[in-house]
Length: 232
Image 1 (spheres, rainbow, N blue to C red):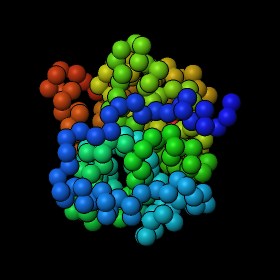
Image 2: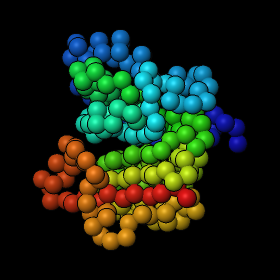
Image 3: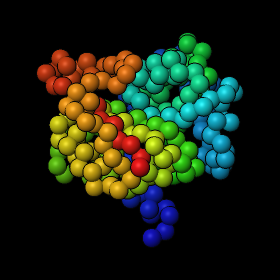
Image 4: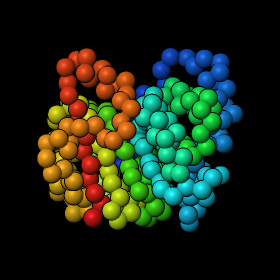
């Protein structure tokens, strides 16, 4: 199979890319600020991803589908020695996060505004310490389950870019997607679930800031699961 056909077959983004019209300031941020933060996938990645950041960083963390960016900006501000890569194809969400980055003056975030599989295929092997996939689209209809980001091919991608001992963190309020993820990671030789007791996956991650998606789930009576898998 040729590489272009493979890329189409594994493309992960199926949703809409833009919602309501952007405010003037948001549009300006996307035009002037985003280009300074965006990964250039047309060039080979640096041998050391830490050189993407003006200050020294000692860890690398990738968040796929950061939504409104509440979690990513919180983590970036609390951990300035970690280099973050945030991927989000939805224009309005990207505009919101870029505004937060400008307001808070964080310099340890790099961004990509298209399909996350493109970033995963670009990254060097064993270059990432942690991957966060938080409240991804559950695609609840059975005929759409093949669109879920957690899949054998994407876990292969995770396994390639994660360092040995690195972690994949997954949060969702949809039971079927939680079970789906547990089964896929159980069947993948590169990952082991770290939970030892129920509280390990029912308790939010340390320093968890919550998100608007989580608040919505609470209002609608759904609890969340917080799964952590280690790259073996």
